Image (cartoon, rainbow, N blue to C red; front, side):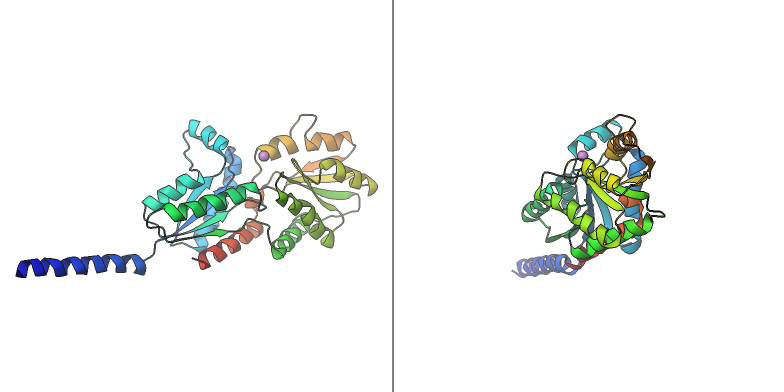
Length: 285
Ligand code: CO
């Protein structure tokens, strides 16, 4: 009898200890989610983000996920393993993380961002031990973000004379959120009439911007990506040697073209905006 009672007490204490341990010591993790890139040079931009995240939150582990299956497969062949968002979440769940702040390193809240939101939400419901997840907003989604990014570009690429202009290459999308690109142009216009954004797959088009440049009698154009990294689109669609690259099209129209091959994640001022969004996500845990 006595022994059974003792065993019973021991069991209660253990299970209490178990629950206390769980509620008293949450294990927080950060998950950084990007489309991804297969360009080693472009990946340096992601290293820059990771370094900065680590310096702000040295005690929280950082995980990465690429949304692009194509890029993950390509890297896998080179011996570089990178998880999908659900793969990374499963790993983190297995490793006992109770609270995860996921940060989108996308530019606008388009279809990839919304896919990631759905994945994170779905995982939170099924992953055992995972108590809470929050999602950090992409680079531009609120008024302040658009103001900050517009200010950054006009200061980083100042216009010296009236025959100069800066053209940013955005991705563009069929998603409703494409409206962020012409929206962003409005913010640029508040600060400059020589800074433009055009998109590869949406609106505004480069054609439209070229018409504007001609009206303004611009002679010299600086081209640079409005994407997290200077990856495939920047190397080929923007600055490639082919006739249909933006550089070639602009040159064919008589403009002198300068290319700045640097992704947004390489600028600390821009990374700071993502970090502020990640801070919101961490505060929400
Ligand atoms: Co693309």
